[in-house]
Length: 212
Ligand SMILES: C[S@@+](CC[C@H](N)C(=O)[O-])C[C@H]1O[C@@H](n2cnc3c(N)ncnc32)[C@H](O)[C@@H]1O
Ligand SMILES: Nc1nc2[nH]cc(C(=O)O)c2c(=O)[nH]1
Ligand code: SF4
Ligand SMILES: [Mg+2]
Image (tube, rainbow, N blue to C red; front, side, top):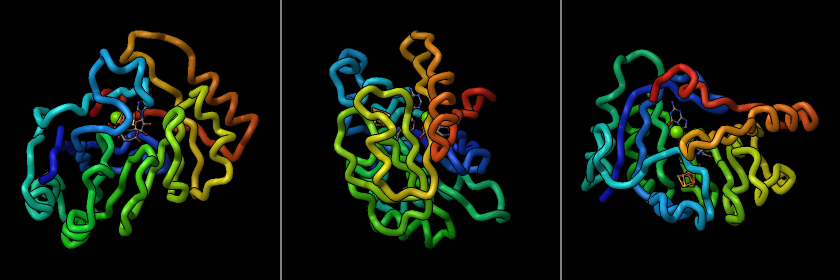
């Protein structure tokens, strides 16, 4: 059984695939925060910008089999042209994404992207793996296509991840607006990238243009 908060068609807003048309499948639940505001400050991940509780979002629900969920996701792809692309996110998608679902999406011709916090080893077969380390949480998944670190995090400074093996290294300015704080994390991130140029800047472009 898979538990999905929401499913929608949009553009990938972040990282090296920014601008790519994508079906987003947001799984319910995370291992680093309950999702309840009263637990935020005492959680390992304290700055999350996402509601991932329940199955009540747009086109959310519970799906009994990998085939059922794959059919649901594939229905959002608008046209036979281009390679269909699904981004599994959450919450923490690696709590639920498994080999049968990967196989079912590939059987439908999809490329599979994952956004993960890196605390759970990724299964084989993911076509684009984005790892985004969080606070004091141990990083288990040290390889992938992009490491996208939200910046600044006092307990997860970029230096801690320089021994890892990714094709791209990004800093993404922490958005504190969901918590009502306004502070310039953008300036801090771009200053760091310019000082240490293996790091590139990732902006949350979907928020700028007002899409999901
Ligand atoms: C909501 S998370 C879900 C996937 C997974 N749990 C993770 O943390 O990577 C999706 C992406 O949003 C990023 N993110 C979450 N909250 C953010 C914030 N306040 N500012 C900037 N990026 C944020 C995460 O680091 C991650 O790259
Ligand atoms: N457009 C868009 N791009 C995204 N990239 C990563 C996202 C996520 O929440 O995982 C996200 C999202 O929520 N929307
Ligand atoms: S690990 Fe990801 S989904 Fe979980 S609370 Fe942090 S940003 Fe949100
Ligand atoms: Mg998001």
